[in-house]
Image 1 (tube, helix red, strand yellow):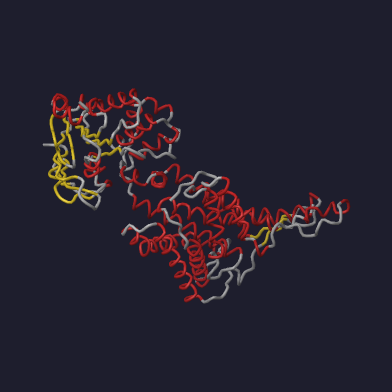
Image 2 (cartoon, chains in turn cyan, purple):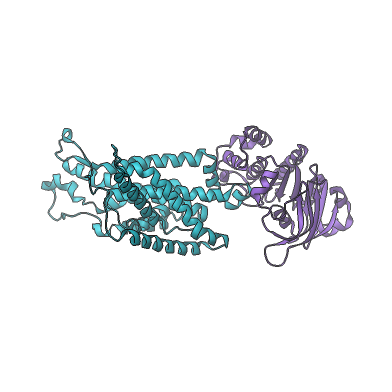
Length: 332
Length: 234
């Protein structure tokens, strides 16, 4: 039984957490791709930037002596998301919009976004140094241990408080996005523009407004994902840059331009990564007595250090079998 | 006073002009049909009205207001609507959502307009929740026209509404165009099926090489031996 609990902790909880982060990042990338038709490479750094905004607000709130029953980062998160949305709008206005106005091709915008990546990381390092910070410097992370002794296990299921918040907030964000895209006038306008930008323009849809809304959603979700990642591990200048490739893989696996695909892709990649590094031999332990000796003690599919390869393996398989992604995506 | 008037319009895609001084006038009661050989600038004329390409000289007036080089998001609220020839529906969105997108600029309750569109095109009502991409060519054309009508236009621009349709659907679409016109919407359309379209046109424009060649009522053009010989295939 303990082995099964170990599986739940290592695969289900971790996969859920990683999947949430990937999904929120991938949704932003897929929305930007759907509307503006370019791969926004700086999205990871938008996440990091959002996490830093949350961190600064947390420090400020603590300095003001505000106390709350929930983690300070969660309390300031809505404000941080608003600021991050503003920053995303500013980045678009400052760097991408002038290029679009001159009719730049998507590849030019992609290269510009690599520049934005370097710039954001540089600015963060300039102002905050290269050190690693923790949201839990003063107060320890609250850890919930769900007792499983009624199943005959001595090990508990372990989840930390930020992990619970993360999963809950991701569900809320996904539902909110769903209702926005299917019920609201502007959300439908966004889908229309992603479907057929020329026809959207001809229909009188305010395409500039749609672009702004896209950045607001992408920026605020990036802030949410970045903060969650920083709460789960630590805050550092290259926090989310390191996971931009699996996030892209998630968006592509889901079918570029498809929001639901990106969410599915995010969780698929997240679970696949945790499952691939899980040592499956653990589950065989109870039956060890009856098993032949040649079964090794480590049955993980890839070593932890090579976790990144999992996303690409999935990506390659999906592109070979279903090139438009799981949900039929758009092409540039 | 004409609903829309083009005066000596020159326009193109940046290179040599495709339209070399076009004149046209359409009243609210008119069905105007533009015919002519390939490359004559028929679609270009529609697109220049709708701000989809650059007008380099001349003026376009809508309701006596200069709208030369105005963009669609300004023109649609004024009462212009355009149905492109291709890619004219949102394929991933339902029929209902397509119509809603046509009413994007309207902040009032548009359910009565939607009802009248469904009344005009009954097959759409059954398929209102289906993605428009799953419909047949004729039904897509209905969605495209329905979408354009949702903004309650005063002038409807149609780029080859019968392209690729079976004769049955073509007649049905033409019938609806006459009905739409009867309800007080001016029509200006480009049409390959010139003979059939000129039958019900109150104004016909024969374009060739980016210029007006013949202008008259539909009947006049049909009966003009020169037009018939050069442009209507004898």
